[in-house]
Each structure stands twice: as C-alpha cells, then as structure tokens.
Image (cartoon, rainbow, N blue to C red):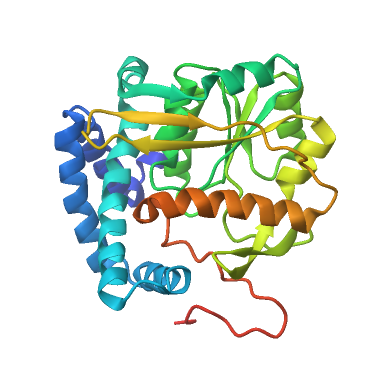
Length: 306
C-alpha cells in the first residue's frame, strides 16, 4: 500500500533508483544485462562488509580453488549482482506480457501439473540465486503461484514496490515468511508456494546442518509445512540462457521420503540439493549473505564484527 510518507525527501533517492531501473527495463535484455554487469563492478567497489562476506564465503565453500580462481569467482559474482538489479527492474516495472516472452522454457513443467492433481498444493523449494526474483515472476506469468517474502524493514517504500510487483504477478497471493498459517492456507487452496529457506536462520525452528561442509543454521519450516499439509516438495530453479535471449525455469521431481521424520536429516537433504545446484553455476548464488553467521556453541564467529 502506497502512503503519503513515500514522497518524503528521504525516499527521493529510492524514487530516482526506481526511475533508472524502469528506464533500463525498456532496453533489450542483452543490452540491459551488459549495463548491469557494469553496475555490478561499481557495487563491488562500495559493498564494504558485504564484499568481505562474499569473499569469506567463497574461500570457505571452494577451498579447492586457488586464490586467483577465488578472486575471479568473486568478481563474476558481483557482475551478476548488477545483472540482478536489472532483472529486478524487469520484474517490478515491465508489463506481464514482456516477462512471458522472456520465459523460453519450463523444464519439468509436468511435475508441477502432476503434483497439483493431488489437490494438496505444492511447495516450490528454491534458494537465493541472484536471479531469484525473476525466476518466480516468470513462472507466475504461466501458472498461479503464491510467493513468500521477507519484509524490508529498513525501507518501507522498497517493500511496497516489491509487494505491488509480486501481487500483480501472483494475483495478490503473497505471504510474509513468518505467517505459517498463511502458507498453509495457500497449500489448502491447491496453489504452488514459492519458498526459499536457504538463508541463515536462528531460533527454535532451526537446526545446524552441513552446507558446503560447514555447519549452517538452517530453517526447518519446509519439513513442518510438508508434514502438516502433505504437500509434495519440488525443487525449483531458474537459469539465464547463455545467448542472453531470456530464461529457463527448471522444476525437478518431488522429493522422495520427505519429510523423513528427522528435521536435521531433512535440513541436510535440502542443503545438499542447493549445494548441487550452486556448484553448477557458483557465481550466480547470493554470496554477499552471511550464511554462516550463526555458529554452533563453542565455535568462533566466521565474519568480522566490524
């Protein structure tokens, strides 16, 4: 919901950014993404703590790479972050028919259709690649999808614009990630629930499970949702096509034996799925997130405090 306060001067930089993204969203995709790569280079120069977090994450997760290879992966990651800004603009400011044209293929679409025939909804299990936003929007342009979102507390205007876009693309079916009842309601309505539980999560609904060989505090909500709703869990990802013409959405078969009855085993299973996909195209994952911020009792912090 838009409010009069959004016209306060403190929001003017955000409005300028939206105008810039809306302008880029009108350009051909190949040209816009080249501009985005340049934006990513600029982001790398001003990212500060986020740059340091990405560097540490890559060193921890890819110890088999030498320093030059790790540095190249880090540079490529920031290029994709800039491209992600362009893609976000496409999601937020492009007409729905343009998004439909950018979706070139839905691989595994039959798994989604078959799962919905059971009438219990579907949990579309995804993770935070840099093109996460456009992946869900592309699928929603072809199939009704409900999106789980995390509130943007530091900028209410950004949250309002994001929700407006996701509501348009998902027929007003967005759910706050803390609203478990809302998620279950979506599944009872036999809709796909687009959900990405791969970020650092603390609290009673988390367990430590390995991710790239490192114990990571992992959200167990996927197991709980699947157990209560009996909804199948289908891994869901997206790919940028190498020729720059658009995107491929990938839906994989439903997880077998899930939930298993062990929350830690389920978390380990999910992290392994994410890791396998990330290793296919590591630069495109969101390494600036401090995935290993929470540590098991007795372990030292991984990221510097200052």
